[in-house]
Image (cartoon, rainbow, N blue to C red; front, top):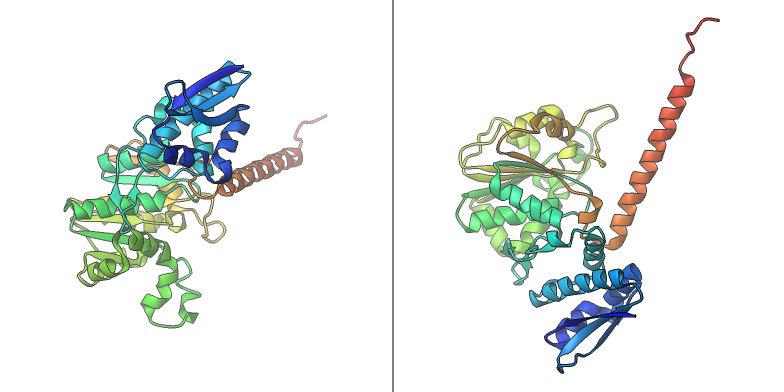
Length: 342
């Protein structure tokens, strides 16, 4: 039997690590085949004891616990999803990539909650936004593409690096269904822009947000409203860009003015364009790759920070789509005519 002792400063940190009804501890125990106990170390201080038959697995589990202790000290939210992510990183031998993950605070919400990168992929995304004028972020739902982009925009505005924030996304049903919604144009486009409102409300508060909108410091509008404009001294975010046509994407990217930054986000697996219509986002990823001052960042299912089932759903759909593609390829091969002569 192998044991590892991780010293902890205070029962509140132990409670955060073990989680409600020991849910977090059970994740670690299942992942590594170990047992976690909370008791006093030989020097009389609080400690978490990791025990198991396999010394290597005990070492991995203790590395995961040690990182969770660090998270708890920074008052980071520790839940089952974050514990699973850390365990997966440790298992993959990527524990060194977790160093300094939660050190940098992007901004603080109105409730005083710090917004930080929660995964290595998110940290790389934030750094890309800091270093480049244009960033294209692609990946599945729940990876924080839009939320982190809005947080970076709010940070830039607070630090007076830009004078306004412009948020836009395509309303692909504008020609058909928007006209049947009640109210004026703003009321009709609100459903499409709601995720952007929600992110800004959390960071700025509804009252402050409304004041900034009235002063023209924050603008949220459909993508069609960007045509013909030159956007100087602005932080511009194009959300749900997988629903842009190639022409719309080119139009948006060429709106960029002096002292401005643009972030384009989207999920290439959830395109709502009509069948046969190419996505401007997928084309932009291919066309702009390798251009200086343009970064293309791809999130994976490991970066999902929503409910743990979201990651499982994404993986299940990816598996189903791969199987369908393989079946289609086999069908095409069997239907090819045999041109050989007897």
